[in-house]
Length: 79
Image (cartoon, rainbow, N blue to C red; front, side, top):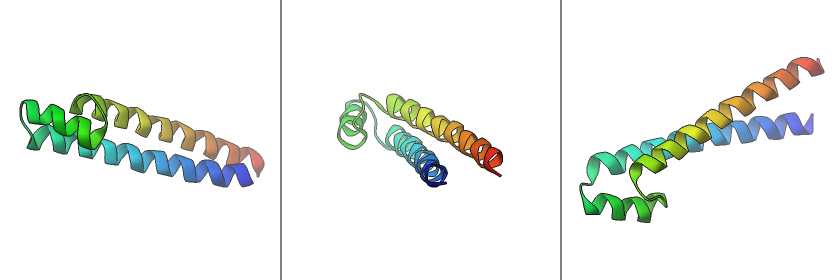
């Protein structure tokens, strides 16, 4: 029961963080241009460029979805 609740929380956190990372990457890509985009990516996103941050966000989002599916399977097996 404890691990199902923790897994649910972690899955939601990963989904939300992944969406936030994608949105932040899109913001940097759309607002900044040229060398300032690379500088803003390194400063605000801790990534080499905005595309890398978007990619990491999508992967985090998908990992959260996968973890959520596994938690739902565990919930179904428990009852």
